Length: 90
Image 1 (tube, rainbow, N blue to C red):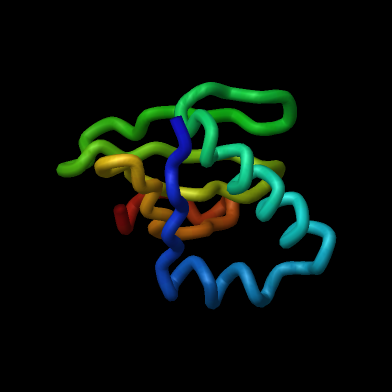
Image 2: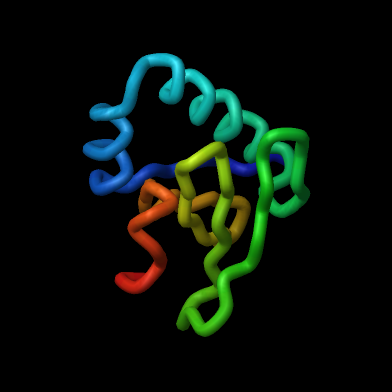
């Protein structure tokens, strides 16, 4: 069961500002998301976010959080935030 990954412009803008080694790490984890988007793996933790209109998840990679939703075999990557920012705007 393979999912496709679609990323938002907000994610892309933040992603481009990251150091190369962090970009590589995030790319690797997004590739792994295609196989199973809700199971945690080593150095990568998943969690369902509470109190969101559409069901959203967060993927923790080091100090960064990737916010995404799942619709019909598609993973919609919404945002990439730093740990200190928080989830207020979701």
